[in-house]
Image (cartoon, rainbow, N blue to C red; front, side, top):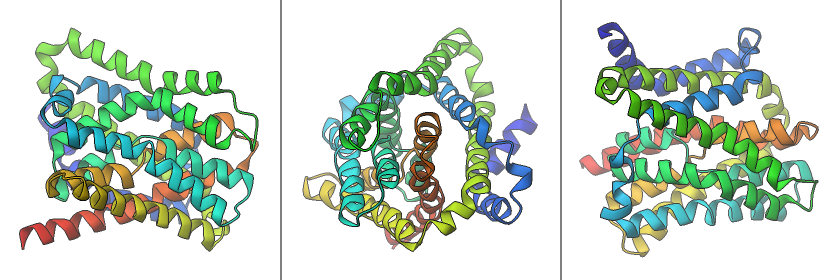
Length: 311
């Protein structure tokens, strides 16, 4: 167990660097990573199960302690982010497949990587953990609803089928994790780092598999898609921080909302694109591009705001 804890500590400390290295390897040598894409849904479920294993009442405490910041953060995720994504795709006249992909990218919840970036950027970690937890649970209903409303006119979308998919990929694993947590709660502390390690490795595999499969598509998709995904990402950061501060949220809490709004659960968006829009190749592109861009801009921004805080 001591060895596992040491490995988990190493992976968590250097997660971003490992991720960037894997992205480079997967792009230039994709073959060893091509077994991963068909298993992305399973890996996402593993991440959600591990998330459930680590949940306790502390994950929801900010709902009561800081309801204003919490409500603003969750509300922004499911209003600003999807509307900006849809608006950018419309304004720049993207194809229907890319519009669907942008809607998916904007409509999913904040990713677990935002928790790490908040910690590095010296934001309110407890707040971002609460927002990640609740927004992930809400995404089981809100993401299919937003996708149906914003992208339904571009292709046939079954709200019920998508809802069932998200329940299977997200809610059920989280509930199972919570149940197992309750069963082995006496031993959870000694196993906690193991589940964190499993979750981190699953995230790394999803990133590597996505780049291996879609690296060429990302490059060939054109500068416009890459630029628009980057703009969506930067607007998320800017609106998350700026609007939160305008509404009276503290700087530390605004950082949490900033990363929640900017770094989306691209793994869920990719899984939904593969499950429901497999015949529309472009639908997965924005989320695939986003997965790469978020892992680059997130650490840069986290380090910048961390240094500013230090000064």
